[in-house]
Length: 271
Image (cartoon, rainbow, N blue to C red; front, side, top):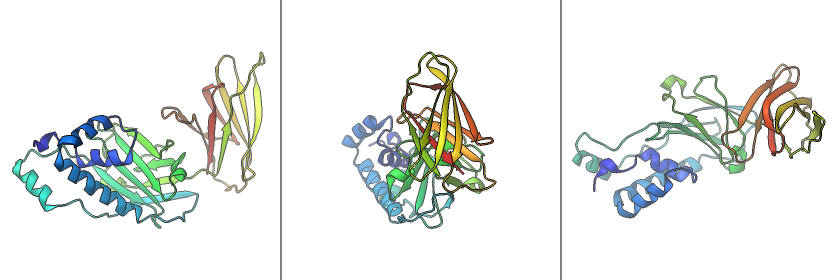
């Protein structure tokens, strides 16, 4: 067995967290012939199970600060002996960290991919559906990202943050809307009002010509508005990980260019 060719611990962790991981077939093929990695995978399962025990059903639907938490270190004498036998050349190691809310209701696992060096974020909670469409502000960079249908964010190939930057904010939407495809005739403008289940209301207007147009989102009413806090508006296509636009609503208006009028859209409001 050549341990140098084995995937890293973080790759096996992503294998358990991400059923859409691109190189899953290669990892599964590797498992067929590698007893060592079977052992590693089981230890990763145990570590993730430890995280599950920290979750609770409670949690405020607002801006939640996530800070590093300690989980049981991944150590085992058998692993140490195997690596020692290989000398200084060890399995490719990458970085990972666990962040959580104060009440442990929200957990964010950050893992750097061993091959691409992309940093992936996995938001986890007792209810997996609650991790969809969350605005995440990681590592004090000022950047904002929207989690996909599986609570994931790919930050791309960025440097691993310094220790003092290992924090994140998770911003839950105050209102969500679904916009069905709009039939547009020869008129250049199409407008409709959308109502949220809690009494929130927005007006969406498409302007311009062709399939891709400018989308205007006007916030008409919020059920529980926060004064002096600007509204952030995010627009995404369900299931399309590459399409996310986030804008601040100035005077309750936000604009998005090159939006496909024929596709279904999800619209999220944040404060």
